[in-house]
Length: 437
Image (cartoon, rainbow, N blue to C red; front, side):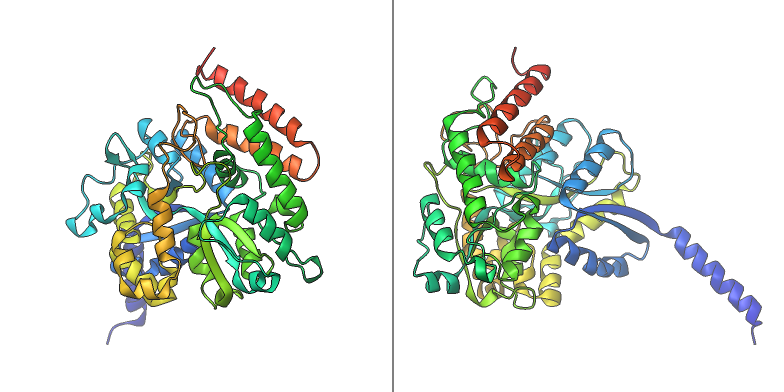
């Protein structure tokens, strides 16, 4: 019989050796619902890879962007895997800040299955530097029951004139129901993601063909005035504090009749376990203002590896797992088909189970395929990107403009003054960066 002390010592030594053999990879991600599911299911990855330990850093969207941008620019090495998007990926790849991911993918991964607009958005010089966890465009969510009660009907292709009429008809302050919920929280990827599309479809653009800002143009003034008036008349209280997650919660609890935002929220809102309005949920394309160009955005939250990571091999293994066909089926088994990551793989949209469980699937796919970041506006522009301008300076420009527009939303300044301040600040930034003299 073994001496208990010897046995205990042996077990402790084995545990220590196992822990020492494990490689810890630190993953920075956003606190969106799909990422929370990924974190929950990652124990399955750890079971299959006992030599890898995952350490999660889950952050609010604006904070995540600030943290990962600082870390990768300074080669801080805090993270091995980063959740990044279609804005950062090509810019950072050009600076050699990211590890290429398509050079040693197994054939089973089937990169060609990834939707081309999403794949292209995560590429630089024909090479892929991030793999998509989910992809999205934008469309209109609405409550069929409230529309019926108000005696209005959502058309197949709504306009912003329709939206204003519907918002007025469905607002019921006595019952705490707002006719429209829109992003108001400042940030280039928060309120400006929506406002950019509104400006596009009202015929505006960020810059003319020589990179001169056009934020005081009639189109910008009309679009932002429309946005501010809509939010003040028919939006929720405290709208300037609401980003994607806050509006999703408001809609899911019955506080909004309409919401124009990311298609990715459809799976959550259609799930009766998460949403009180699942049974009355309707979907329509993003509204059109004066022109169709840029009315709906194109985005992907993706996973990339910073060049400063010391665990590239393990990081690649995790990313391949989290963006695979097998992961889609794992989510379906765990949380149901409506919850699977949308907008990335064509094979997902070919599955009968997904088609049957996700009434929003066809509209989501159409929106993603229709979005054109190379022609985001009706007028010619020197940039690409629908809800952002694909230049390094836009992160600071967009956030500053978003803060000024949020100030107009709460009445601290007028729309005209907010846009004049924004235009001057943007011009200074662009001059300093050498875009024009």
